[in-house]
Image 1 (cartoon, rainbow, N blue to C red):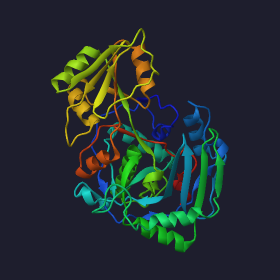
Image 2 (cartoon, rainbow, N blue to C red; image 1 turned 90 degrees about the horizontal axis):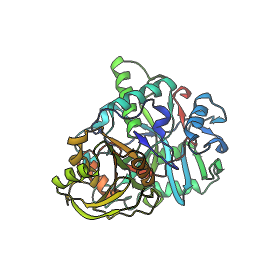
Image 3 (cartoon, rainbow, N blue to C red; image 1 turned 180 degrees about the vertical axis):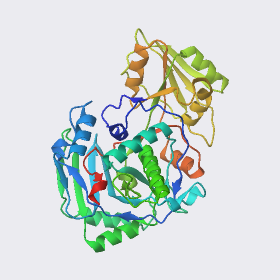
Image 4 (cartoon, one colour; image 1 turned 180 degrees about the horizontal axis):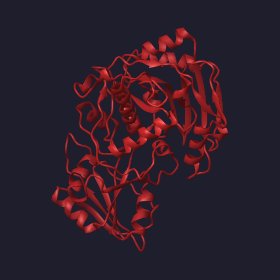
Amino acid sequence: MVVGYGRWEPYDAVMQQGDGRGRAGALDPALRGPLVLSPFRARRLDLDRVAGAPGQADKSVSGRLVDGSGVVLDDAPGLYVHEYRIGGRLVRGLVGLLDLGLDALTDLDRGRAAVLPHEAVEPDRVDRLAGRMADLGLDPAPILLLPLPGPGHGLGVPPADPLDPLVRSIVAGAPVVAGEDARHHAHRVWQVSAPEVVAATAAAVAPRRFLLADGHHRWAAHLALERARAASGGAPDSRHGDGRALVMLVDTVDQSPVLHALHRVVLGLGVERVLDVLATAGYRTRRSRSVGSPAPPDAPLRLAHDEVVVADGRRRVRVVVPHHAEATVVEQLHAALEPVVGPTGFEYHHRIGAALRQVRRDPGAVALVLPPPSTSEVAASATSGRVLPVKATSFQPKPPLGVIFRSWRDG
């Protein structure tokens, strides 16, 4: 169960029902290139309706996506560039429909694949999400893809890449949307409808490689719907979609979301039991201290790249993670604890304070505060085919819900 999202909105929570705790899953197949990006008729909420009050935004915004209030439907199909600034971070990306042809999926040769998932999904949650998407016929928000290198290049965009100058020329023109949403986040949106520019942009995207950063459950739900449609021999329809998913391709590394950790809470074990399990797995205690009665949940808490903080309401213990050249901290933590708590025995928090507040309320709960993996670690994991646990990463900020979305019924 994901709780404590704080300032960012959980897209998949808009579409799913249930608590989000299902069976542990596996890594979705990668997508071979060349990528096929297509224009579409975008729907856009009026910016002043993009977000409601904190804690209520998901319900109010998702209702507008469905009932159409305050929604603009563009007359002609196009590609889009969406630029937004949240919390001082500027993010810019190209929005379009990505072809998810089943014959282009692969579990092999991931080092050359064009789109690489990196995180496990919960099958139960995918099933629920696919059902909701089929009922509503909506892509509620773009799946977020970050740039990966071509062969022979380091992490980032290859030299002389043609996409960046194309996007720069697009944003030199006048945007179709410019302003602030209800939370005072700045947005600009450009539409690309000229056939020659659409063709040039699609050609520039075709050889690129991307890491699937956010939207693994929506990706898996799209694939499930496409498999169901193909099995029935049916044509594209408003219930199964058309084999394409709404994506946002971040075009530059310096204007991309930042990778954060998601923190864990386990119930019923207590700190001593968790520490015993970790010690058996080779973790060692770096420092332990009492933090008062009760522990202040919002006190600053900084972590080294190789440590995890194990905490309850009265005690925080810093433990050093055993060095493993080919495993991230979150992989090692799950490998140590899953035999005891099970693969679905974790609850997840985006913010440290939320995890610490939970363990204050529940004497048997233990918080596990993690450092984020690096983007290069995540990319290496995805390329090798290693699956990171469910909710291993959080790329923020995401594009707010409703700025650009798609109804399957629009053709």
